[in-house]
Image 1 (cartoon, helix red, strand yellow):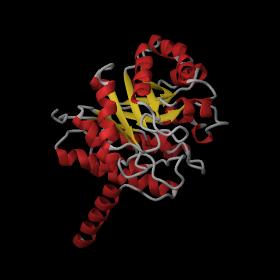
Image 2 (cartoon, rainbow, N blue to C red; image 1 turned 30 degrees about the horizontal axis):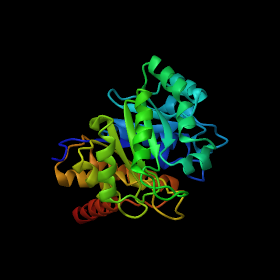
Image 3 (spheres, rainbow, N blue to C red; image 1 turned 90 degrees about the vertical axis):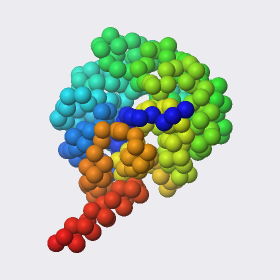
Image 4 (cartoon, one colour; image 1 turned 60 degrees about the horizontal axis):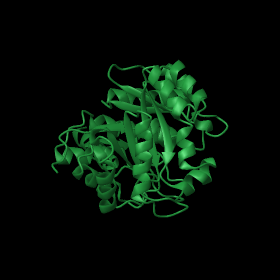
Amino acid sequence: MALPQRVKIVEVGPRDGLQNEKEFVPTQTKVELVNRLAAAGFPNVETTSFVSPKWVPQMGDAADVMAGIERRRGTIYSVLTPNMRGLDGAIAARAGEIVIFGAASEAFSQKNINCSIAESIERFVPVAKAAKDQGLRVRGSISCAFGCPYQGDVPIASVVDVVERFKALACDEIDIADTIGVGTADHVRRVFEAVTRVFPRERLSGHFHDTYGQALANIYAALQEGIEIYHASVAGLGGCPYAKGATGNVATEDVLYLMDGLGIRTGIDLAQVVEIGDFISTAIGRPNVSRAGKALLAKARSQQIDCA
């Protein structure tokens, strides 16, 4: 199959990337991050999460973040909503898309939310219906689609089953997520080959973590299966909570560099994203783990010195 000519990159740094930071990131820093990402050309920015601040204190300012951002025409601002209360917050905040979630691993579902996969997704039935009634996009995210920290291998049939459950909720897009970053290229191709039989290829997305350094290879494998939507986190924000010290989300700069090299259009300004990665890394005092971002930043600074 020919590679797509254009892909959509969903920037997840402000939500998935920041949610596990121990030190609270100031609301204004989050607002500036979202504004700069939207200005760089991202069509979809995962902005925050309407969850209990008791469980995710970093997202306790969700309403303030949503109130503070500058809305750009054509940009979708997504928020995670675990329940009806979260949906109410999303509606009040004028979110453009809600994200609901379920695991492909029974062990993961039981360990984290103390219920089966089927029960967890059943809880989202009223949330999805109410969101649709309000004219919101609904995105379903499937965690542990390539492996689980508790049960190990996850059958492809289990991933297909969850895709079909989210399809029944009228999800606009469905994310296939490698939560612990154990996927390999051949596994990725087999999973997407299976799920594209039950859900439209153009509405599936790949969400890859780089724990074992395979994220870009896995993205290329998904591209070979015709997948046109990918998630990434600027500067590689976020960690993998199930592999101590390991990298989590694939860095947006690295994904954009890959797409540029393949001649695949994204509509996103890589140079701007490199600067944004430097901004947020400095602001929260953590290393920038994007290899392309650091290399391009060093190159730009070297050229500035040579011209001085």
